[in-house]
Structures are given as C-alpha cells and as structure tokens.
Length: 92
Image 1 (spheres, rainbow, N blue to C red):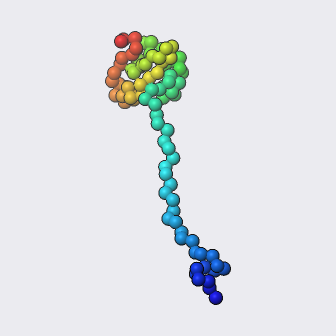
Image 2 (cartoon, helix red, strand yellow; image 1 turned 30 degrees about the horizontal axis):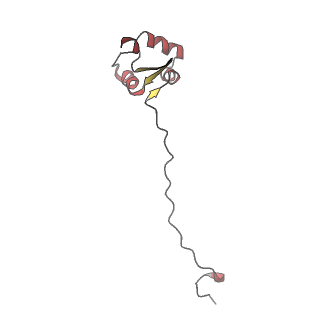
Image 3 (cartoon, rainbow, N blue to C red; image 1 turned 30 degrees about the vertical axis):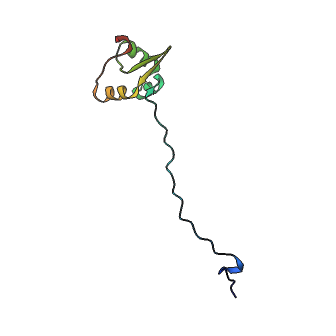
C-alpha cells in the first residue's frame, strides 16, 4: 500500500519547476570608433588605401590618437549612405 507521502517507494513527488527562461546571448557592443583595418574591410580595399584616402581628405570622421587613426562609425556610415561630411583631420 502507498505511503503517507503519496509517492512510490516512500519518496515524495517533486514539483516540476517551470522551464527556465533562456536569456539571449550578450551582444557585443560595437565601439563608436573603427580601426583602419575594419574600414578597409568595409570599403574592400587595403589599409594603405584607407590611409591614402585620409591624406586626400576623402574619408570623414577621422580621430587621431598618437600615431594611430580611428574612424567615427556613425560618420563613416553617413558618408557611405549619402556621401555627406567630407572633412578629415587635415582640414581641421
């Protein structure tokens, strides 16, 4: 005959917990700045070609940190979409 706890073999019946919510994987936040290599990948050209275009003032949103050049992602996107803001660090 059954035990007082109602389970088979004297074990209490476990309550089933609701399924755990799966959190989406944490998304990598994009930096507001891009490197010359990233921009070269976007433009399908070499890093040297990116530097040449910066020298000629053809790429906007250039930020110089020491000897390195970074590019403001939003300025580059705006430039690629509609060709606005044609300023470079040489014209400042």
